[in-house]
Image (cartoon, rainbow, N blue to C red; front, side, top):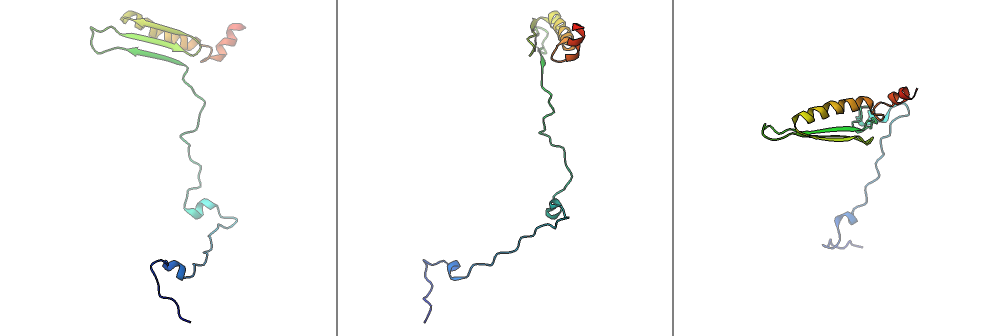
Length: 118
């Protein structure tokens, strides 16, 4: 019996037997997997980890470089505190009031709330 001549419709892979499966290298029981793959085993800092800090109070100041333009500012907090100021003197007062609010805000300083009640 003779083999048929190769044709264009039959790929050469069908004429050859498939390759034998290769063994997979698995690490020994005492050997860490990372060392086998060349990956460092040490735990590194995850920059996406959440540390629980959230912005609570904001101060936004608009002060153009020209002295002829009037500056403005806005201070707000998630506790409900909100103030706005227009003009140099009132913006400076708002900045001071924002600093005072940060020291007395119940969300930023939960211990100060307990002292006031005692």
